[in-house]
Image: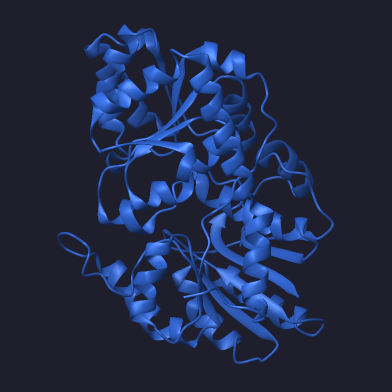
Length: 389
């Protein structure tokens, strides 16, 4: 088997999307499967091995090859067609040697993928990160672009070999829409790290939020909580987001009088974020708002990052968060700042409770490790087995 991942985003793009893609591809290489990753060229130096080490924090593998493709420029647009055409040609070429499994999260690649799977040597799978085929759950006016993506899913998903869902609820929703289409529910993976200096992290008294600073992530509520956390001598760190968002949130902490206990850092390379989580964080928080998307369609990458570094997790009591953190998490009702504050404070007041929570996080991380996920998906994609319904 040869695996090919296809994505239209740029190599070293800030945020979690490409980092998750690289981890996905790297995990298949880790279990000994020849893996190719096709995505946009970022215009940087061609040294992929150096980027993997320094930017993504993973060791290069002889089983992993990265293909960076320039987009076409048309007026003010940058078209993904060259990436998709390159991936399609590559899939057909690889199929001359072995069966090829093509995996994409790009809805706009589905027409190409549906054509590829006409070749019996190629199997095609969509890794789903949303729900476009039925947009009835969306509130307000649905964008024309999303309606187009919905049409693409309804037309082309049934022609694929199967679906890779990132939550169990997402799998249930897609099974209702496409009951004859094989699927697997496989949350995104973790990168379990050595425990490090747990006593030092406990003493740091720092609650960390990682990722985008969008409203649905519960950031506004967490900013309000910084005043009480600061009163208890607990620092709050926001690691992610863009300059404009950071400026707005920093101004709010100044108005609250908590700014001396609050830190902001924009998006940084995954390797740098991993170092900070390993050395400076005490507790990871995921205060997602209670929306349909957050409940059923997202696999919170921030929680996976926390678990990877053995950080106790405090998150909103939503199915998506519980599915990932399981027994390693402490849960609060969404937007319930007082409960979140009490959970953070309780963990940082008793070292024995903190160490037990950190051990539970490390154990959960081992269960969700990227290579474990890759093995499950490889078995599913090969057609040798299907998960129980």
